[in-house]
Image (cartoon, rainbow, N blue to C red; front, side, top):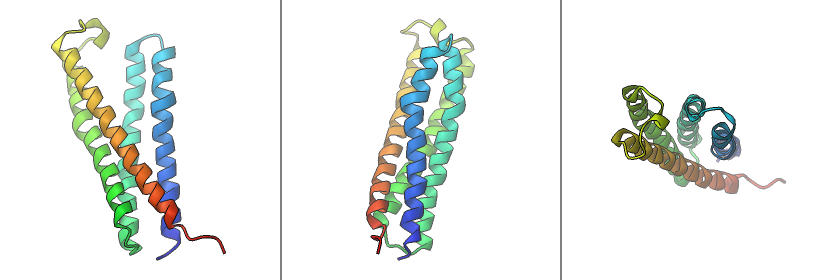
Length: 156
């Protein structure tokens, strides 16, 4: 096995996990805390989140490709990378598309809807599903990262 593969994977995964963690723990909460309206905060988060999801698709896919091309035999890393990529793809392409359609159909800020309005409830459900997919992707990436770090050969 080439030593460069787990090192490259470690770097890629650490970067993506760091970006996803920063977004979920700092950027999104800060946007809702400091921007003058929830609509503006939602717009900001809605612009940044696809970047996180697409980067997750690319990162997870690269893990799989690197393991195949590098003939590492690291099926665990490949599987975890594939799960991360798939979770991000589903979150962005399926759930994100439904959220966008729902926002367009609503036509007014979500806060203008009653808490029990079926459209607001549907948005909340889709948001929770999106958060769940991102959480699964991050968990899978952490597994892949752990396996990649363990595969890095010791220094001589």
